[in-house]
Length: 391
Image (cartoon, rainbow, N blue to C red; front, side, top):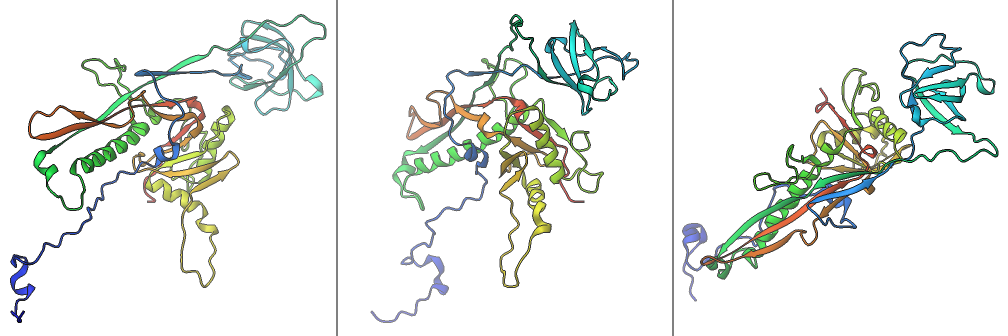
């Protein structure tokens, strides 16, 4: 063929013999990762009702508190009132707060304890209202009758399943055509909708709330699950609260290692739970990374700077740090992952359900129904009210 002199720059894309140059890749930048769900993994069980329930129990408590605003002669008195007299037995050794004196309980009348002071020869301490009382242990009398039976009552907890669904519809012509970058338009739409629903499921697991009335749902009330944050009632910490110290600088509320360890210690002190997961947003993750910044050392030939904390180990547990964009920016969750499960209702994990065709199109919906089982909420914690900037 002879030279024609044609050039692409003179004719552009209108040159009929030039094919369109369209990449066979489709770029998606919308966030859809689910780091907390990935960390928790698939549950060992499924829910079998839209109202999912589980049982929780506790041991008999071994702590109480002085409840006596009219104390006199606090170093010599032998009778004082406590908040829960039924927690004590004759023969108990008790200690108030961090004081060294041990007392011996010789009588109980309602909420009034009669005690022997200076038991074992220790110096008398003052009995102060609201002092925490630790029951060291009970001493039974040799040959005595068995004491009265004591027990705790199991409590039933519950959460509700939430339906997640997205519809899709593709025309017959689109299915017959050859789209760029796809083998099948319907399968592509299924994948996209599933990504959106998984994203929403993680967000609801963290931030979801159950309805204030008719939470089980009705013809006019949509059923929603209660998320982790809404389930927490015991360990709700803020800095400068007495339990959690001030952050950096002594007066502000920036997250630092003292704040985090105080929260971990507070959970450990009243629960056998093992905090193994820290969930936080971007700014608080950078604060955690900064815990070790001052201790970093680099050789002259280092070309890579690493500023990342994926695991945080303290006296109160080894914690994986999970970065989730769905966490409120001023909060950090401390979780025992072994007591958490994101569970589908039986046969209702995410799946595609074809719908009847009403014309020249194919339609259906991706649908799933899930709930959160969060056992022993006092085994978890949240630190809130944190600063969201360094200024």
